[in-house]
Image (tube, rainbow, N blue to C red; front, side, top):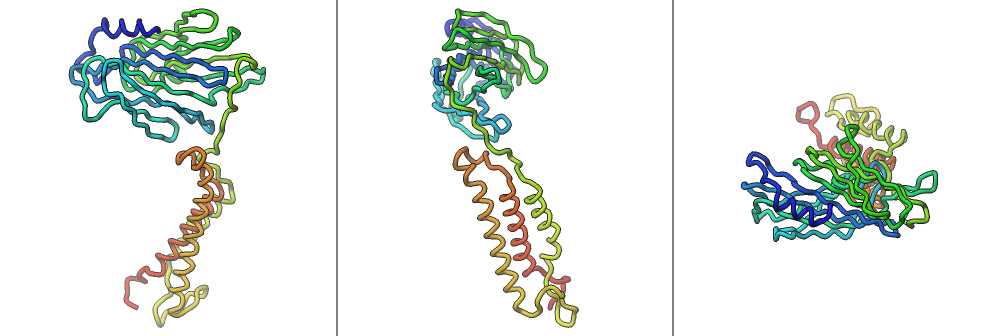
Length: 329
């Protein structure tokens, strides 16, 4: 939808009902595909806060899908109606949450916002040699309805195919299509309910773009039998690790040395196990966190082994100071 059409909707559309928390009369997305495979995204959002007003909204852009991660960079926000448009970002396990607005300023009625960012590593190589982009241009995280949505896709090549489906999950329908020349196409959709989006699929010949290859990270759970078994063993040994030598006159534990030397030894062993476990977890997580952030941490065998050592060490430290049968020794 061209910006002029969005402006006409802004001026002519009826106001939101007073009982609504908010609504989006128009949502206009432009996706410009560069020769380097980076997609320049510009979202023009008209948000109706009604008479009650509001402080802004949040937009979630996915950066992780399964083990695949995308590059979201160059974020810029603005408002053509003068509303506060400062952006604050929060990285979630799968989405980048963009909060637009000001908690100290209340805005009412219709306000227009622009969110711009660059999307990288989003193209997938297909077996037939083409590149494919599969992207929800609006997202399904909106809690308010969208009256009129439009997605414009611009290609660097005239030899390309594009399609769009609107809705959520398996309940989707084809978007209305309005081609605007050999290098661009517009998709329109009216009456989107909360949590319904518009997913665009673009296919380009291999020679049209030169994108960076897809990037993948380890799954959140990457542990095998070795790490899982070691952690299970540590948990199973917790009752034994939490025991203390019996008081004088009682039969001593045949496995543990008797006398006052044992608590000191147990404390030392516990500290060694705990420190070793923490270092193992940090070593396993450091590479993932350093490259992709805290939410890229994967629970692999080294992390599970470190957790097992940490459990054993903590239990040993607690066991040497635990009461024995509730009686004084």
